Amino acid sequence: MKNWINRLLSSSADTQAQAVEAEPAHLDAANPADAGQVDALYYRWLLGSAGELALPETEHHILDQVRSLAHSPGLAAELVPRVPELIPRLLRSLRDDSVSTGELAQQVAQDVVLVADVLREANSAYYRPLTPIKTMDAAIMLLGQNGLRMLLARVAFRPIIRMHEAGFARRVAPQVWNHSEKCAVAASLMAPGLSADIFSACLAGLMQDVGLIVAFRLADRVCQNGKVPASPEFGIALLACSRQLSAVIAAHWDFPGEVTQAIAQAGEPDASNLAQSLAQGDHIAKLRILIDAGMLAQDDVLVTEGLNSFQRRCLGKLSKLED
Image 1 (tube, helix red, strand yellow):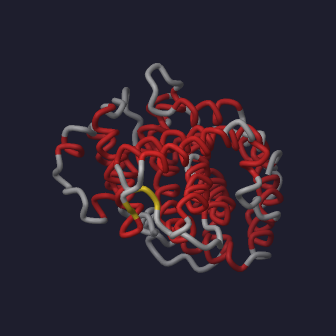
Image 2: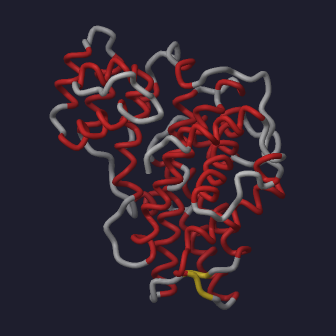
Image 3: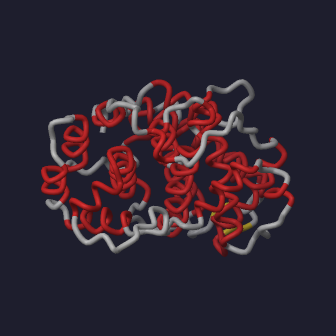
């Protein structure tokens, strides 16, 4: 996975504007107190019935293991799968302006799962085609270069998040992936208003949760009963330190420095524009999930006063994404 990321990010930025309908002059960051409330609710949603009261010593032990693993990036990276080989070939083709839509369609057709993903994406409510898209050529033309690049990135990350293991990490993986996809889209929508690169924001959104899956695997080893500590304080701390673990793994995989830095800095004062895009995308994605799960009302103050008008439009746009 080390070098395909740089190839993936290297195509021109002239297609960035198609991901958003308008670029606001300024986007407000989420209030830290609001972010804490949302993180606590989101962690509760992740746990479902798998949370349990745990001794402080158990919580500290898990958090210490996650932080310790951040100092061993090679070992941390071994706890998640690598990217499918077809994806780097497709991304190389996307860089080449001489490659036709038909040639791209032929390469995509080599993987039946990828074919289904591309057609499903093109026919989704997000793109709203006037008539059903039935061919690969038509789907690729509709998605455009940037849309196809972001779709390929999502396909590449899916097996990394959705691991086939026993325990809580396996059960929670679909929920984490749901957030990863929504975060990637929301971060890319926030990026232009903050003068950040759209696709870098998408990639940071997809990468941010990798450390969380590793953290849940460590929690499984400590608790050994398919449950994890349920306290909101632990959940907030786990989300924070697992994001740092994601940044460490991203650096080990040779992600561009600005993407790695954005993951590490997200939510901090004076963070980079890309980090702000990621933090806002993460916040909006969690709100969307909590509203859809019935844990938060659409007219809750966290939405009506916590988001500006553009961010609320992004929140609505996320409802059109397929889980």
